[in-house]
Length: 59
Length: 553
Image (cartoon, rainbow over all chains, first blue to last red; front, side, top):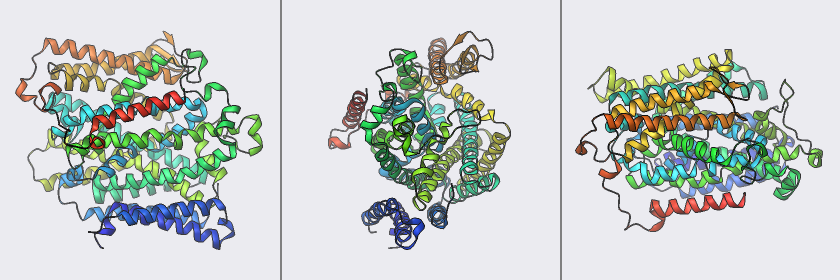
C-alpha cells in the first residue's frame, strides 16, 4: 500500500477525487456552489479520479 | 472575478499535491543522474504526457485561445501543420541518435557529433533562453493574477516561484515531469467543461459557422491569397516557415521537450514518446483553439444576447489575451471557477518548471562540468544541480521584475529566441544525415543562421515591428514576418554548414557510429505488434492529421 500511494496514477486519481468531493459537497451544501455545472464536473472528476486509483498497480 | 472559499480550497489542494510529489520523489534521488536526467527510468505514458505538457505552458494555453479568437480555425495550423509531422519525424528518425548515443542532453549530442565549440554555443544560448523564458512565464502569471483576481504582484511572483522551487529542488527532473502530467490532466479536464458549456451556449458548431465570416472557419480555403485570410499568409510561407523550419526546429531540437523522451526506460519507449504524445496533441485544438473561435462567434450580432464579449484594452482594441480568463469568469460558477483558475496557474507553473529543469541539466552537464569543474564526485554534481535549480529560479524572479519594468523586454526576448532557434534544425538535419558535416561547418552555420535572422528582421517591417536597419520590405502580419525570418535563417545555416564542411576535414567514420544515420545500425521492429512499432504508428498519425486538415479545409 505504501508503495502504491507513491504511484503517479494514484496521486492524480486522489487529487481529482478530492476536487470532485469539494465540488459535489459544495453543490449540495452551499447555495453559492449549487450549480449543475459543478455537479456534472464533480461527477466526471470523481469517475476519472476513481478510475486512476483503480488502475494503479498493486506492489 | 471573485474567488470564494471552495475556489481557494481547490487551489490550496493543488499546491499541497505538487509539493507532496516533490517529497515523494526526493526519497528516490540518490545521484546527479537521478536528479538531472531521471536515470532513464520513466514509464512511457508519463514521458509522453510530460512531452506535450512541457509545451503546454501558459503562453500556449492563453496564447492559442487568443489566436483562435483573432485568426479563427486557422490557428489549428500550429498543431496539424506545425507539430504532428515534426513529432513523428523525431520519434522515427532522430530519437535513435539522441537516445542511442547515451547523450544526457541535446548540447552533449552536438559535442559527440561535432565538437566542443558547437556544444558551447548551443548550451549557452539554450541556458540563457530557458531561464529568461521561465522569468517571462512567471511575470505573465503574476500580471494575469493581478488583473483578474487583484492579487498582489509580488506575492504571486514569490508564491509561484517558491512552489516550483520546492518541488524541483526536492525531486529534480522526475518531480517536474510527474507534476507536468498532473498539470496536463488538470488543464485538459479543467478547461473541458468550458468548451462544452460555451459551445452549447453558442448553439453548436453549425451555429458558429453560420455566424462567423467564412475565413474564420476554414483552415486552408483562403490561404491562396494572403489578403484573403486573417493571418495574412500564403500557404507556401506557412508550410515552409511553420510546417518545416519552426516546427522541426522546436520539436526536434529543443532540449526542453526532447529531454522528456530521453528519460524513457528504453529505446523503443524513447521513440514512442513523441508519437504517443502526438495523439493528444492532435486533439488539443478542442481545448485551446475552439474556445477562442466560440468567443468571437458569441460577439456576432445574432449571439450578442448571450452576454459575453472579449474585454477591450485601454486603446479600444479587443484584448485577445484576456479571452480565456474572461470566458472562465463568464461561464464558471464558484467551485468550477477554482478549477479553471488552478488550471491556468498549473499551465504557468508547468512552463516554468520545464524551463528550470532543462536549464539545470544543460548548465550542470554542458557548462559547469565541461568548462569549469571536471572529474569531481557524483555527489558534487548533485549538489551543483540543486544549487543551479535555486539559482535558475532566482534569475527567473529577477527576469520577471525586469519584464515588469520594461514591457518591451518580452518582445525582445521572443525575438532573440527566434533568431537562435530558427536555424538550429539545419545543423541537426545535416549532422544526423550527412556524415561529411564537420564541427566547423556546424558552428559557423549556426552563427550565419542567427546573423541572417537578425538581418532579415532588421530589413523587413510588419505591424510596426522590425525594420531597425532599413525598412526595405513590408510584410502584412507579424506572424508572416516570423516565418520568413525563420526560413531565411534556416537556408543561411544550411548553405553555410555545407560550404564550410566541404572545406574542412570531417571526423573519421568510426567516431560517428551511433551519431549519423548511414553509420548507425537501424532498430528492428519486426517482432513487435504493429501498434508498438513507430513507423506504422507514425503513418497512422500522419493520415489522421491529413484527414483533419481536409475536414476543416
